[in-house]
Image (cartoon, rainbow, N blue to C red; front, side, top):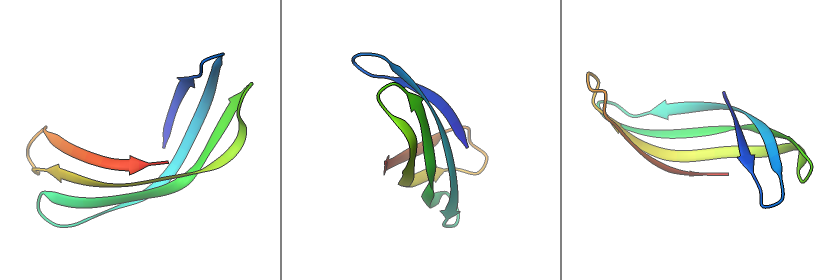
Length: 73
């Protein structure tokens, strides 16, 4: 679950993202997929919209380094 904010040209809007996901793979290479909803509360946008993400993650088990790339809506 994530919480954040975004600003637009003319104002600001707060949003709450609630996504659930899976992380597959073994070793240090993983595929991830998440889906859920985003609630926007602002002047320009208001209400629920879908939220999704797919990505690739490379992380060694005992390392603090994570390489992650993906695309989301």
